[in-house]
Length: 328
Image 1 (cartoon, one colour):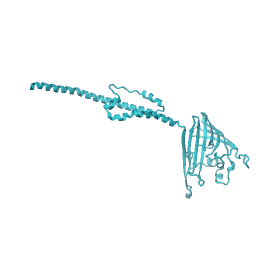
Image 2 (cartoon, rainbow, N blue to C red):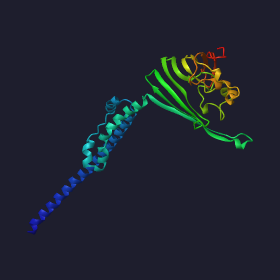
Image 3 (cartoon, rainbow, N blue to C red):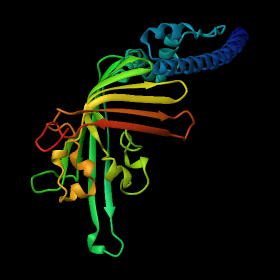
Image 4 (tube, helix red, strand yellow):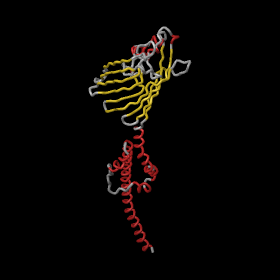
């Protein structure tokens, strides 16, 4: 009995050794394949991330299929696809990858949203000016005020026609007993006749002086605007009318138009406004403007050299409007 059992024991031991010999290489091979498959999956994830980044930057949704086809995957011998690898080998990545199909529609719609936002016909703009003034030697005369706040909006009807409006509030509060003003600084429609010529109609700034058209606080030095373009040129000077603007390749820009003129009947030589800025006190700003006497303007500016602006303007018109006591 012992002699018969010994060969059986030996054969069993030998069979177990052979099984271990076959299993060990198989396990080693599976580990190598698993490492290769994980590497392929990582490359796939990096490729998907790159494709999604491209889709985010794309402005046309119809480019998404082309982008997907333009980046073919490199085939690896013995590799298996990511869907079949997720449930069997790396289930921890399954929730993250399972969200990728759901995220694709949102990414596809993003370029459409960006395009619609970029082509919106409405635009908003504006600026504010806060002043603190302390006269030298007169501490009691120090004043702080919200000098002006301008809220503007534009609307583009098409590629060549647009509307511009600016509403200005001075000194923060406006009422019968406060020093302030609410007024439309600009309110006009402009149309591009061609790439070099445009026309506008409405209430717009006169192309006179250096600051009248571009008068934000960052465009001049100091707390307030200079004396020339406050007392002599009534910045901001705007009138109702029609105008043309043309530009040339050499840096020249010309303006011409027909507008409402000054109203000499508004001048009061004894008032503070009449003394400080005579023209500022008689320009009409589109407020029930008398239009019996009109005015013409013309301006020429040269900006062909960066940092250099040369220009001049002419204004001619009556100020009497056929009122009693005024010749014109």
